[in-house]
Every structure is written in C-alpha cells, then in structure tokens.
Image (cartoon, rainbow, N blue to C red; front, side, top):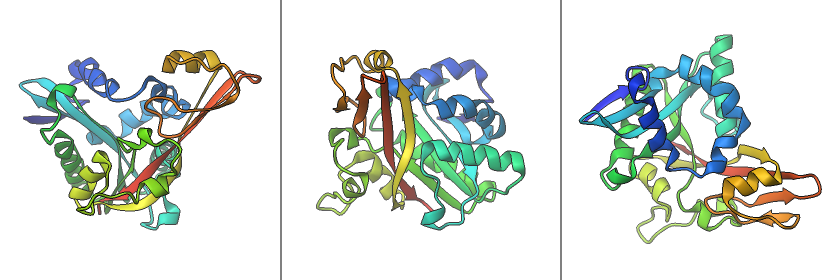
Length: 242
C-alpha cells in the first residue's frame, strides 16, 4: 500500500473520482456550495487530499480541510457546507486554523472490509498533527441513517448495540478510533433543484406537493410542484477525534 496526495498523482484523478462517486447518490453532487469552493479547497489544502494505492490502483481516498474552531460545541460549523466556507474564508483572511475536519472518505467496492477507511482517517489525522492542528472533527453522513429518514439525527445518534457502540457502521468506525459524538450538524448540506431535476437525480416521480422519502437521502425531500422546486436539507452528525 502507498499513500499519496491527489496533487502528486494527477494522472489518477479520474480513477479516484470514480471511487468517490460510486459511494454517494447523484443528488449529493448538486449542492451549490461545493461548486463555488472546491476549486480553492484543492488549491489551498492539497496535503489533506489523499489516495491509498495498491499496486498503483486507487483503492480508497479521503480529504479534509483545516478550520479555526474554539473546541466548543456552539462554535461548530452548521455542517459540511459551512465547513468548506469557513476553511476557505479563514485561509484567505489569514485566520489560523486549529482543527482538521474530515470531509469525505471512500473505499472502492472491491476493497470493502479491509479497514481501508480507517487507514485514510489515520493518515489524515497524522497529517493534521504534523501541521500543528489541535483538534480533529467530522460531520459524518451515517451509513444507515437513510433507512430512518423521519428520525431526527440527535435521536438516531443515541441508538446503540448491546456492546455500547452505535448501530450505524460509519459511526462505529469513528468510535473505534476513539471519537465521541458532539451532536447534529443541522444544516449540513442544502440541495435545491426543479421538480424535473429531482426526478432525474432520483429516478422517481413526484406527482404532488409534499415531503418524500428518497433512496439514500438521510432526511425527507420537500417537493413543491406549484413553485417547481425541490429542497433537501441534510442533517449530519458531528464527532470529535481529538
């Protein structure tokens, strides 16, 4: 195994993108905030954008951004989008970062159950400490939350197995690394589109104005046919590693 940054191996960008894309629903890629900020994120924070290679094949990857954070829960960003904005704005205004926020981790489907996600998280944590960052946090997108889209995240986060760990596989991965749950990221991502766009992204039909359960969505999606608008506000879950 070899760990490299995407900046080091630009020839593998397409392969890495395919690994990431297979793990998320199509609608996730239509959030407007990343479109505005990801170019600068890649430019400013390339040391925290890594890939794991196995004989030069991309098997996993992940990335994070450094942000200023006081260590207090009430100073957390509202979620994924707000973290991107805070990271870029702090960098551009010279505000020192104290914290690395994991933003995404993906493992190729042929390499599941090999602990690759933990390898990525550990390497990003090592890089955070190397850079002098004090804290490591993450706005998690829990794997099984889409099975319970009507359940608030703060309640879902309390559901545990007899061994005390979360019922959710992705939360458990972080707990096994020593992470603790801080609380919901209430407005982590906001995705808007026309009804036709939402039907294309989800492969569903939305005949009436109402809230809908959509595969792989953690929360309900509000469709307004009269305004020709669909809005999805996703809650994530903040955890802290150190």
